[in-house]
Length: 125
Image (cartoon, rainbow, N blue to C red; front, side, top):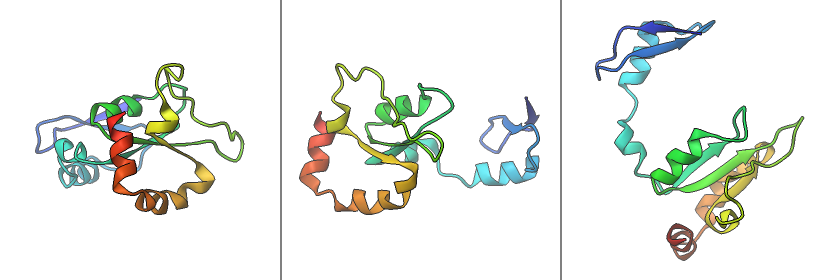
């Protein structure tokens, strides 16, 4: 259940999660200072954290933006990795990176360690 705030300065309605202690004014302040969506599409890598279900809209957005997916999944209770869709036809191991939540602190270093040739190869596939 969500509550609806008045529109932001961008003309879009904002929604508050039920039980949230964020006010409409606080949400509007955050939203109005966030980068435009088009700027978010200008990225080389994008996180695809595991969600509540095996499918996640995040992967669709990452692929549509042309970014290299960085899967983050598993936790203390369930260490199973994110299972990307169409694994029989998409070589995810060649075009993405995979990390467990416990290794999230290594992600930035791992991305910085990739050379330009490897990144280009991942993007081409």
